[in-house]
Image 1: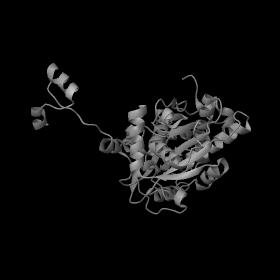
Image 2: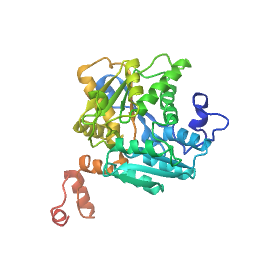
Image 3: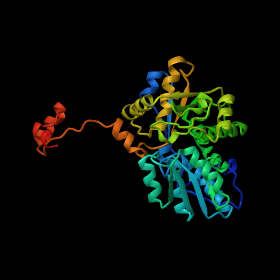
Length: 360
């Protein structure tokens, strides 16, 4: 491993001579320029592929810092509440650094791919009859008494680590983008990017802050509706949160950068997920696609983005939520025999052979 976030951005992070280096090879994810959508919307669109992190989501970017400080503070156990990605990330780093990991999840409300990851890494999983907000409340109340280090985004070191996404984008673009669209669930990520861009501007590495646009799901949009949602619902499980822990920081990010919060429907999210896959070759989880869905909605009433540079944070890999992909994104499978002429015919006419249809 030639470089790590720990060393690359050490001077911007809360690292001392006592802080151990923790890494699974997180960060330095691709920033992919759109080939098709940029032309359609007359702007430069870039997609930050955070699904290329070790546990396939952006959570690793903050987890390395949270776990570094946990070890520095002699903690041997970590805990998180999660709708999926945090559980996978915490469990991966816990396994690597011999930390006992506890995950509290809302029953039936976590994507299969994420749950399987946490199980594979050996986390102790506790499923509760409640939602994410109730799970996080429990984590807050029991962690101190049980000697557990919380590694949710309420841990300030998580946000410090996630700032590095803003550093990477600025380094690659030789400056900050004009706009950044990103999904918002617990609101830690948009808060951390805001902190990162501010730090880079203070260091005179960039000359402006991007306009931050935070996207929430229609029935899980406390920051758009300006109220706590007691029973949030959306197929985008990663942003199914009704009372974001980092609400204040997120609101500051929007206010200072002149951005806004937007909510989109599940249908709009699935449409954006399909467009990203079929027009750009990028397969992301539903919550990630909310960023593009939000842009589509923004573009219906605004045109100030034209001719500008836009970044989109794709927070997790599409394989994180195979059930949604199977239900909404799957294509027709053409069935035929193994005979060359039948295969060729299927390619040409796009149809299955009749006897194959009968048996399959």
